[in-house]
Image 1 (cartoon, rainbow, N blue to C red):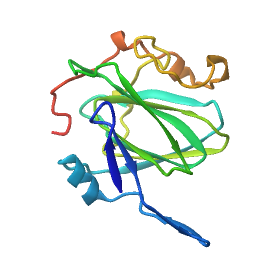
Image 2: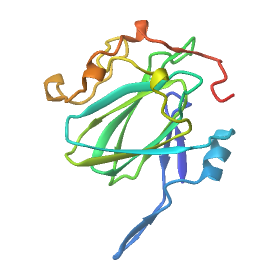
Image 3: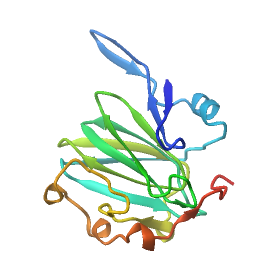
Amino acid sequence: MQFTRTEIEDVIIIDPKVHGDDRGYFVETFRQDKLEDFLGFTVNFCQDNESKSSRGVLRGLHYQLSPASQTKLVRVIQGSVLDVAVDIRKGSPTFGQHVAVELSAENKRQLFVPRGFAHGFVVLEDDTVFAYKVDNYYSPENDRGVLFSDSAIGIDWGMDVSELKLSDKDIKQPLLKDADLFDYGENLYA
């Protein structure tokens, strides 16, 4: 596995090694020890989630507040997405900035999204299957979000807004300036 820090160093791209031949392929998609060696701290994933979506579905930008904040390790099993992580830690040198990475069944790439970040993705192909691990259980009372189209963040989703398929929840999310946020330097893994 190759680990690469992005422009926001806490967000990490993981490229697993794919072993293929005429029969198909084998890939190791997760190694706790290698991830922790790279990170320098422990992450205990406790829940796996999966969604299937059609082209144009946008899910996000979502996060959970402490004490239920979540780290996510995301990947695509079938199809492709543009995956986005937004730094929502007040006081961070990269506050309000984002990383956008194409994840696909073909490239097998994964994205590590730490606590303190909002996360979302737009689906680029029909019948896309998106899977992710989290290190804290879903908590409805701590569930929050930021509006996907907030100009203060400036995400280029790669599609016209008229092509997007959004939930009522995602259309009604607050702007970053009005959202419940994290504090930079807060130990989110305590």
